[in-house]
Image (cartoon, rainbow, N blue to C red; front, side):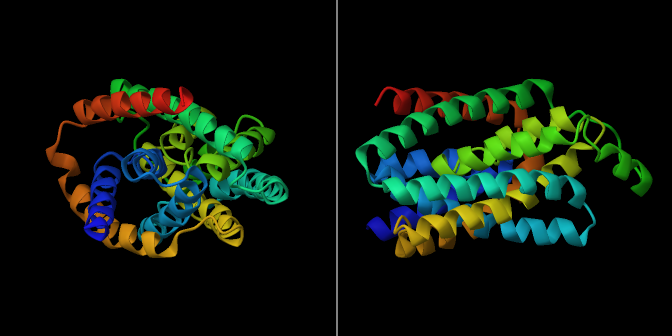
Length: 263
């Protein structure tokens, strides 16, 4: 019975990700902790690889259509991956199952969910506004940040956050990109967010696996549900009131965040 429940959880999260674009970590990790009683370090580690595999397909699809601004992806990765490796080193020295680490994970996860809720609500209110489609020369210009250090800094912050909580590469990442690259069209911002999340979550997930923080049978069940869920959600995205869905989702994430902080 539990096997079906895990597959259904993957289906549900995949459907919401396909429908709203909000990262699976902000949904799957609290669901595993509260819904199934999974230990925080196992929930985070398993969800990181879940995110890596689910976003890999989206990256390939967008890259084939020439949607991914690789310069942006490279600059964010240059900050996020070293930060992820440094965080994994600290976790390796202390031990992911240490009560202090567990407490830091749940508190940081709660704060990350509150940030994600705020970012999701911001996008719901703001709507999908942005510059129109632009040519290759304009994309190159729009892919330059106001200062070269900003993507590295924000990449490092997100890399640390994602490695500790599996949350941050979705709604928070998109919001950061919108602020750093205001001239970049929204579809390219989303493509950049998905693309840079793949190496980050893969590195962080494999690092957690080396610490024994990944439940492989659970990962397989979640992926079995998420793949058709994402397909279904992405096909219904134009038939649902996006602002209503995102606003409800922001409320749910805020509730989960407050519950985690209060643990």
